[in-house]
Length: 193
Image (cartoon, rainbow, N blue to C red; front, side, top):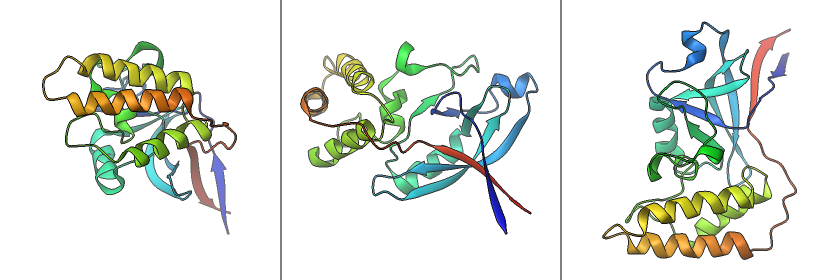
């Protein structure tokens, strides 16, 4: 028989790191490998092996594994953030991302470059999912989209992206979405009893 143990999370954010630049590893915190159950837009789930710091209660994933996962699934409505260059787990929903491609929205598959776009209906379904399942709040989404808009509206060749962002900001502000069902990331470990 297989039992499932779940792990508490201080934050529902899956942190993406490069190399070994995480303070948990440098400070020799107890870091174990667990399975993350990540929600998908169609109601299924993806399982991905991640590292879990028992002291910080945070989950993190190597950049190479993250790229493989996104190549396979292209869009995952999961709260994601990059680990800061200092190795700290920061909150980009408060501090902001350094570049559009590092935005939590871009990390979970939202398009931020010309030619990378997805149809308006698909983007709106994605934003709807994030709000409905309490992965991000309206306020967080509006702030992230506005930050992306401010960074791209003066760049040459980004006019389609600017129109897309303006449309999506209006959607987030005006759509009638009741956040009800939670579909957070869960961390589990299996063992035999």
